Image 1 (cartoon, rainbow, N blue to C red):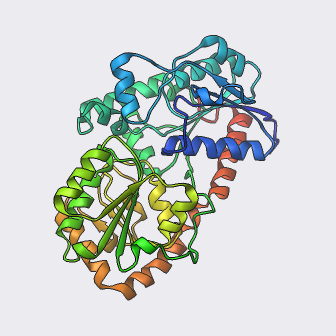
Image 2: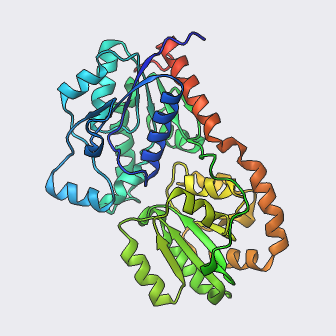
Image 3: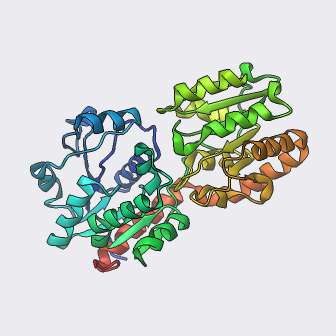
Amino acid sequence: MTKEVKKIAVVCDVLGKENNGTTIAAMNLIRSLKEKGYEVKVICNDEERRGEEGYYIVPELKIPIVKEILHRNGVKLSVVDKRVMDDALSDVDHVHVMIPFALGGYASKYCHEHNVSLTAGFHAQAENFTSHLGMMHCDFLNRLFYKYIYRNVYRYTDCIHYPTQFIKEEFESVVGETKGEVISNGVNGIFSKKEVPPIARYQGKFVILNIGRLCAEKNQSVLIKAVARSKYKDKIQLVLAGAGPDRKKLMQLANKLGVNVENEFYSRSELVDIINNADLYCHPSEMEIEAIGCMEAIRCGVVPVISDSKKSATSKFALDEKSLFINDDADDLARKIDYWIEHEEERKEYSLRYLSSATAFDQAYCMDKMEEMILKTHEGKKYGEAV
């Protein structure tokens, strides 16, 4: 395959601190492409990056009420600045859009009009958007969202990057067949099973870990309730690694139910140590395209217990029913927690089985597949013909 691509634009409607899956996925791709020798132009609204080489900064969306809701959820959306975007896009060989909002829509139409090859990631599950409106269970609104982003971005896209087969099928159930590749976002190699110093504050405790944004769709409240109903409640140390709009509410619930909970946003190195000190990983999320936190835990050999929600891809990671619980059912989750506490030897055996299942999450491999997708799309141009 001829490597004709030299300049790539990565269009990021949302980019800031690496504390959410979309930003982490974007930065992993950007770093990987640069390391492979490509010139990468990044279009985003992150003012902290203004002046950095290769970054093109557009304004942030500042509609008062909308801005307040978004900031509460740790999100800053962008506004199109045609001058900035045209400057960035004018001489690139290929464009990759991260999410299908204002910048992604403008870039997609630009590529369509100027015959530039285009790939676009699918990192915007409908429920992640409708949850901000308190309507994540509204099927009509979720379907409407998918139809909108298809018309705004994906109908122009030569190839869609789907992180999981689940979200590909979810989207296609609404808009019909699409052209795309299923490629995991991958897990950084720093996350692996290793000997780490015991964390003193966890000594004598059974450590249950959850990694992710504290918000409605992640449903950490059912995990807190399950720990409260466990026969081993007083022995359990629950660790919620993350930040988000539901933090205060979750801490109040834990205090009310007498659950020992630790909550911080940990650095990557701190998180590696915590995962390798954990006894069990619980993932109660109701909606998820790809749960990087759960993948990180599995890469470290921590046995997971995962919601069987039909709107989440994460249940596919479970080896069997012992690692699944009925979605939003605290009693069933408590039973699964108690089972793994009582069956330590079996937990060790499953740890090894989960380790062997995690090879597909290797980030270097996934980034190679992303490069391959970009080159193949550019070479064919009509690999995913616009409709």
